[in-house]
Image (cartoon, rainbow, N blue to C red; front, side):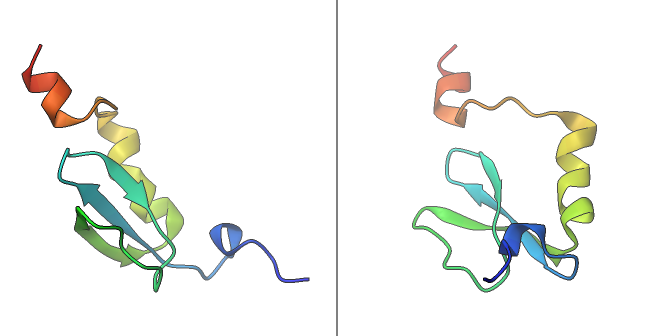
Length: 68
């Protein structure tokens, strides 16, 4: 049985950002959903998570933040 690609030691993860400024990790080579783009090129899981861990951005889409 194959392991989970999100837990592989050698896996690479680009950081994606939606049009609403939400962030997500994807395994490198995965399809990028519509309305999402690459915010940070693929690197290790720890390196991809580090910026978000430091700043803890708001989880709401930008459209909800600007409407507040």
